Length: 237
Length: 116
Image 1 (cartoon, rainbow over the protein chains, first blue to last red):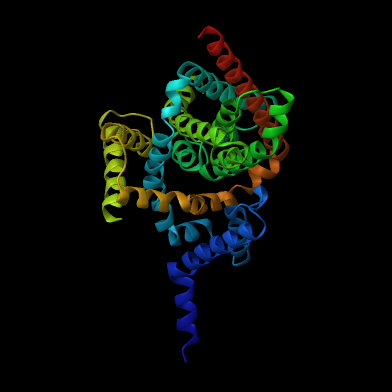
Image 2: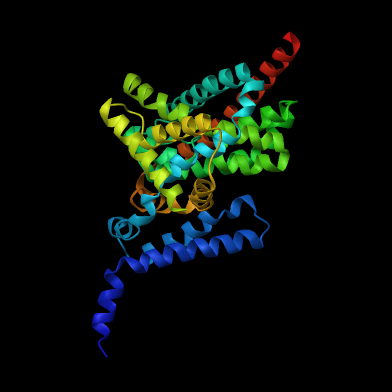
């Protein structure tokens, strides 16, 4: 038996990391459903911890890992295009509250980007961190391609996106209570525009109306940010 | 589902071409998404094969981010150095933005109801 050839194959085939990555995500889904879909146990977090440990333990370089699983990364493009459908399905809600939606969309996106930049400047953070945090409220697929566009670090950006999603899902309801928010459409819209898909998952628990406005906000917020952010960055930084 | 997948790829392709042609800074797939949205509005709906292709993509969306997300192993020094700056900005930024946007939208809805 040729063990050297076997080990050589396992070390070099993209299948090893591909299978491990898909498997870890499957384990993530199983654990997530077992624990009643707890926000902190998102499948991606479980999968991430498993793969991160495996990559670090085997001393694999990020370049080698990425090349093995590049086929997964390919779907980023079509997945982003796919977001048009949930947006289309919730577009009818725009008509009833057109002016509140457009104003809240534009002001909130700008407010959120500016407040993030100001906070990080106060902490004397470096430019890479600041740029990577400007996409924190955008749904992840758009965040990755936009952060590449503006010269940020996509892997940091995606980390910030996930944390912002979870923070919004946890803090949303207490904040709405504190601010005495009356309309479910406002709660949903805020969750979608700040905490994207994870916020939308939380909005589903509030009401159907909140969920619809959250999905709507996530879609138009993502598009609006992808359009204005590169312009803001070029203009100011 | 093949027709649906082809539709998604064609719209991404068109988006990327549009961005190249007009030297835009917007990511190509986002333009593709806008094109598909316009297509759905004009067509007044989707079709079953596209529904299936999209549902499959959206179901496993987080999985698609893992290759990028794993790049964090090259960023440990930035995170270690700026840990508190990052954490505080994320928490305060999210709280302020949530409070601000929900209050603003609520105010605008009440105002619109009063006017009509």
